[in-house]
Image (cartoon, rainbow, N blue to C red; front, side, top):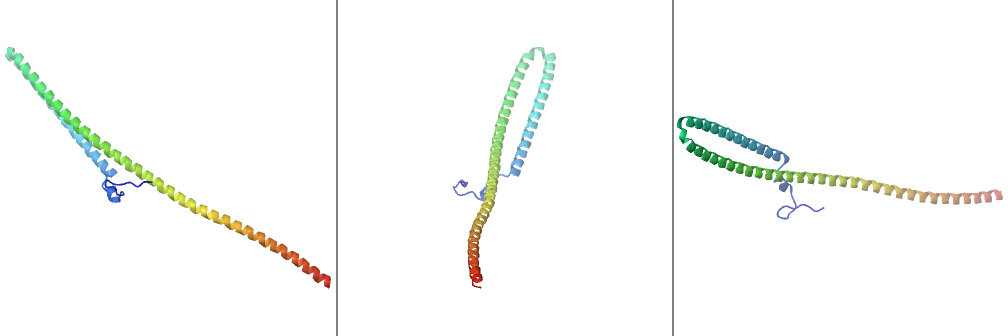
Length: 185
């Protein structure tokens, strides 16, 4: 298995791993980002309320002007259109900035999640390799003991055969001796 290397081409050390964000830190970052997004949503809601308030106020003023000024309504309508256009431009500008910030946050989150997932994958892979190694070590010991036992049984079998041949030889010699002793008596 090829060892991982850091940016300088050296093997990865515990110090290199400590520089990476932990799951706890990632959760804290995500929580912070969620709070920021919630804050931005509140600001947008507040801006919507302000716009609603401004619009309501403008509508009330328009009604008063229409009643009181009659002929100047066209001028006021043009001014309102201008204000509305500027408000739309501001809202569009704020939305673009928010979209940019949200995209940055999303990109950062995706990268952090990707790193975390890779770390978890690497940890699981390392644990599997370690477990496999321990199993193979135990299996090697077992097979060595089995082989030693087999060889021991083979040696014992050979010894039994030699002992049996000696015993048979001794029996033949004893019979011969007994015949000689009994035939001379």
